[in-house]
Length: 89
Image (tube, rainbow, N blue to C red):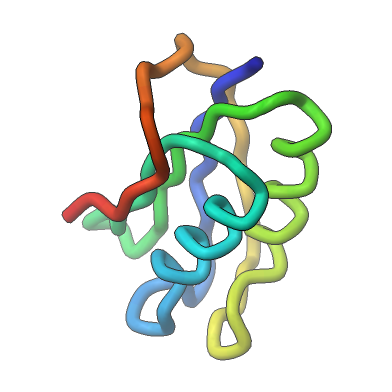
């Protein structure tokens, strides 16, 4: 298992991006959380096995229909103690 923090840039707020990330993460069995940042970006912290995180990253780069993702930055972070995937406010 690995944990990564993703910072998603572009038109990703006000377009249902957090709930898109929630649905995708739940479908893939990823645990962690997603939240909007004051900068207009979205932050995702996710824990899963490497192939699943690769899949997640690809889907985060696509985003929901109304979004326009211009970049996804990934950095490793210490493993979190998550039971599920949630939206943080």
